[in-house]
Amino acid sequence: MDLSFFRRAEQRFASRTPASLDFDMLVAALRSQCEAGPAALIRAAAPTAPRFADPIAEILLAGPAWHEAVAAQGGCFNAEIARQGPVN
Image (tube, rainbow, N blue to C red):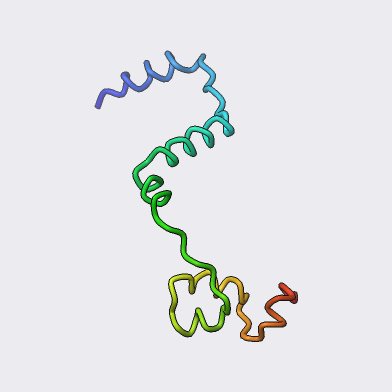
């Protein structure tokens, strides 16, 4: 098997230094692409879900914002302890 092609390519590109990645530019480009996509347009046109009054009721009734209610409770069914924030 002739591998001279790979050796020539290594010799040709050995003197080049790779371009460094500009992370801020990459993030800005990805955000602009996400904001211009069809999913972002649908999300902008959709009405926002109303905030729940009681997280426990939202969880038990499996309302549309039950994921946020679980996060608001922080794994605790006691509302006072949940409002205090993380214990550990």
